[in-house]
Image 1 (tube, helix red, strand yellow):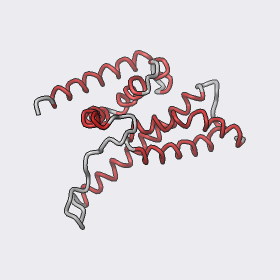
Image 2 (cartoon, rainbow, N blue to C red; image 1 turned 180 degrees about the horizontal axis):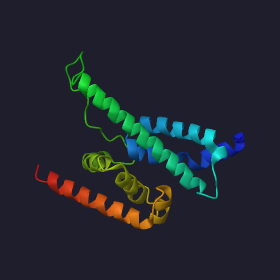
Image 3 (spheres, rainbow, N blue to C red; image 1 turned 90 degrees about the vertical axis):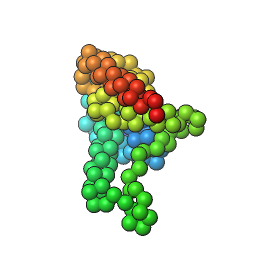
Amino acid sequence: MTSQAEFESIYSEYKSLVFNVCLHYVLNREDAQDLAQEVFVKIYHHLGQYDSETAYLKTWIYRIAINQSLDFLKAKKRKKRFGFITSLFHPESNELAHDVAKVSHPGVPLEEQESMEELLQIIYALPEKQKTAIILAKIEDRPQKEVAEIMHTSVKAVESLLQRAKQTIEKKLKGSEGF
């Protein structure tokens, strides 16, 4: 069983990392805070199962935060799809029920939010593995070796994911020019 002091030490050391990873996925401060809390509940309950021989603690925590974020996004997408099927409009206002996500990221200056929104929406729409590679390598600034460990893959696979993601992003950004 995990001691309270051990968990508090882990929480102190990794709370910012977990929050930032979640925020990069969900692009909303409140959702990221909720997700971070869920991540630490999982860490607390599964810390006894952590094996330092198979992964560094930081890598294990990254995996939990990423998986929790991806699960959240999948659930949100399913809910959105169901909501779309049942009703396209809010019954009380006749306004669209599902707007495009707005950036609510504290690190983005107000004047840059529109172009950042466009870029993040493109990243947000990438396949899960490409999105995870981009977030870890480019936004979280993690070395490719660490990204490979977190993603349970090779450095070559990470390089390939990053290259494909970069090509997709460039293509979509070029396609949106001229509006």
